[in-house]
Image (tube, rainbow, N blue to C red; front, side, top):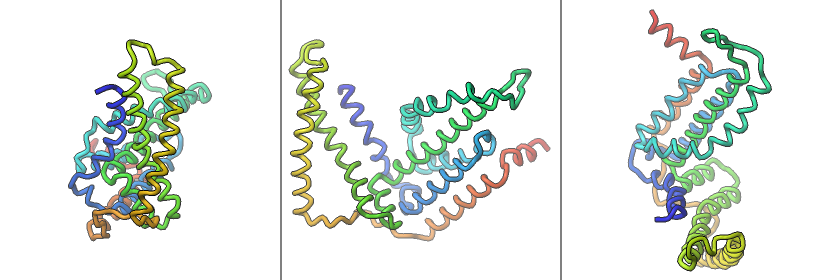
Length: 267
């Protein structure tokens, strides 16, 4: 399997994890979406110099990973892919904010480093929760939840089509790259000229494929509604999960749980 094939498989692998049969997977998609949004809002609401107060929030992704049987390696790999963007944004903080805030064993720590660490912690919590939402719900399930929450249907359908047919576009690109590799020897046929030709062919094939797809969905009676085979009804378990999770987020946000636990264990 080539590198292109491997990366193509990895793009959709996270969504394939959503079809397991665990407690988390059986929860209503709307409930999971609301809980995840409440989690993200609670995390990003912390001030820029706060780190200790966000540590209890790691319990939520840890619970979802363990209860949903999600491989930790997959989530960490996805986080590593997007981490350079966050590091690039926050790395300038120590240069702009040089005011000393703490002194640890004689080493002065500026506010820039504290705010940089806060950005990294917020990134780990928010992005991991979004990835776990996809891994336990699937992207169509999330779109289904958005539709049930009265998000404009045209936006939801466009979002679903964008996600669904990006893989069709990648399949077309995969066939073109395979054909190029079979006709090239060494580094021949791998220059910028070959790349521009591939882009042109991919554009033409995408337009033709989109027309066929549109005719196919119209012939099958597509009316703009999102339908899933699995029946997601609101159950008592969903309400309990949402209540407990949101209550925990409120407690974590309102009280310094880390300091309280430290006092308990120190006495």
